[in-house]
Image 1 (cartoon, rainbow, N blue to C red):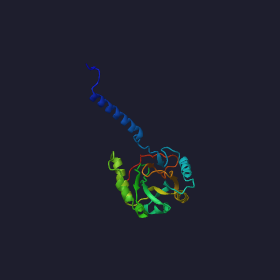
Image 2: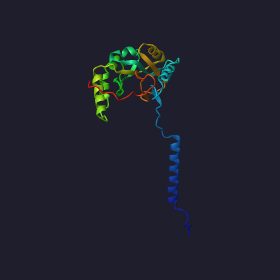
Image 3: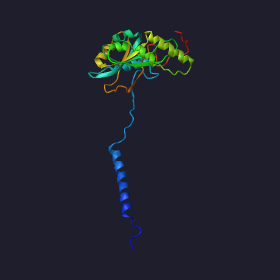
Length: 222
């Protein structure tokens, strides 16, 4: 009489197949580990609360070196510019983004970054795009008035350009940094990837620390 404890051949084959599948899955995970989400740590501009003097020194240090590779860089101005003056502050380098913020005394207005194609004309005419990119869903009546006023002033060609993101070699960036009207030029390492770094310009009215100004002033009608 056959031993009742002996497993049928079919069950043995099924068990062997299951073990083989588990081993295959383990090996697949070892040979092809899952990709981890990228951590985007690159940043152009001062950290929140950073002392302005410290940021200016850090920006100068970022321009040291002798490599000839192109770098992403942030140009911050001593005062906001009208769009027509953008080309004269780019050093002839490729402009990637134009940064806008409408200055209003004791009123916090939104910062808008406008990506632009190559060519000075696209940068000069980007204020209209900035007006369209302003937030539409505002939390209260005051924010709605600020947005409406910002859009109107941007469309009128106000002196509201507070920074540029450029692409160029260190030598060209150092040349821009030496020009009048330039407060800071900060470059990222040459291996920084477009779209994988944040940008916050040093605003002209930030004198001691990179902090938002007060938001208790009246919002003008126009």
